[in-house]
Length: 241
Length: 241
Image 1 (cartoon, rainbow over the protein chains, first blue to last red):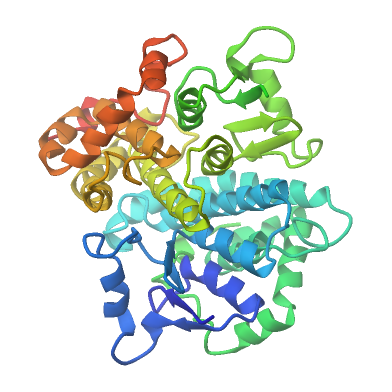
Image 2: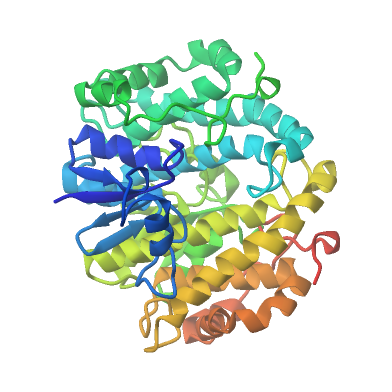
């Protein structure tokens, strides 16, 4: 089956967590809003968000079309792909644990976003710079250590492999990788000074990065570069050791 | 089976979404941190969050113990309870759609929280009042209409009953009810002036409120009152028509 992914064409954003899963399993998919022509581009994306006309319309991108199903919410799309492509354990308890870790990554990602948009997602960064400075400081000093320390602890219980579940990769590992490289981009100083505390998290990130399909994807033009329109933005004034 | 729910004892918070599901199905559960004695209270909760010692330790409350399984993240707990107690459709697509709606409620709840804590969850409201005023204004004027309008649109596609899925209640309905009463508490003026635009959402909320087990729960001392330590807080300066 050919999937259709709908997400903003110029940023990694939340869509990237889905792209990584699709790429890792070698899925056949179209990144609809990045393609030209009728039935593609941003208009195609907007059309499916019209909850008055579309059954089960999503609230926001990303969403994935799989046959006649339209699935929204990043973690929910991964729940679906995980079960379908072996990116989650087969047993019910293992699936719930994977999803729990994914939702914790999602919370962390939302907080990373709010460092540059603490007042309103609809306003420019320039209109909330002083608030952003306060929020970013708390994020670096309190939230990053709390979340990264949590994932480090989870990994410290595994001796069978580099991933959250041990030897076997799940979608939560792909997402944790994306989070780490995003933080490296947005907060290089804070991440450099924290690195020694999160060796297992960084090892997981490298293991994901070296997976053949992920490495090929990252080197391709399908991988959009980080930029200051996405979730992870580098503003020097928000970073510090 | 007797469930054990772990959540902060003095607030509704995110634990309330789980409590409502447990109450609606008439589950046998202990609200561990609210009980006295050895093995209960906040220390019992803290012990299970120690990721170095507990396999699959959660990042934060709420979490639910079901036999030997410990399940964290509100939406994930509801995913589990939904499948187990008929609070979600039986078909895979219906389950994903329910979960998608739940995750959208969760995003809305997180934004409601951040109206009074836009800088840092670890700081007092009093230390971020000016930022809170800006964020709350955007929340009332932009985010509330966007989210509530979305749920109204979803409901407008149903003619078979008051709930998101039509005649049959799911955990997403219980959560949307909690969101509506939370917003009514925190932003009574904004909600009063918006009411006419969200008739279906309010009808759903009343339908949930009138379910016998929910009505009994709300009238009991198991229902903690809204207060200014929880997610939904009433600060008059953050509300407006």
